[in-house]
Length: 78
Image 1 (cartoon, one colour):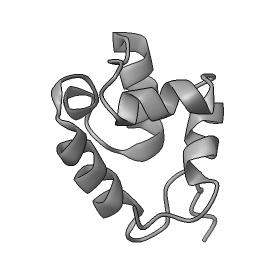
Image 2 (spheres, rainbow, N blue to C red):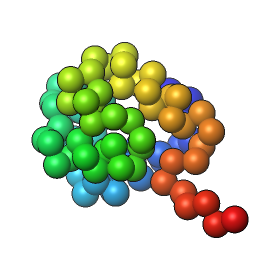
Image 3 (cartoon, helix red, strand yellow):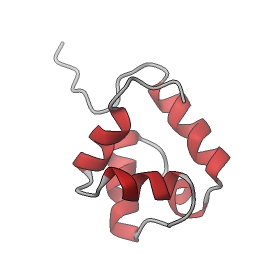
Image 4 (cartoon, helix red, strand yellow):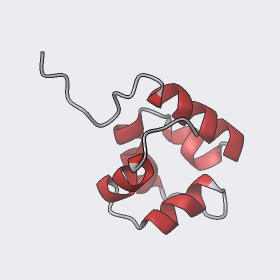
């Protein structure tokens, strides 16, 4: 995945879950709750529908697209 090192840990921290739990969600070993899907959408801009129902590949592609500009989780202070 073409994301900056530590990004996955930052996402997990924002959502108040462990990095292992987030890894399980990315690997589709677990599905996020509806509340967690909303938090993931808020932080990553990836649709909650993809978080809950998407395949591993759909999630990874959406994250790569969202992180291609490396602007996730940062405020525009201009």
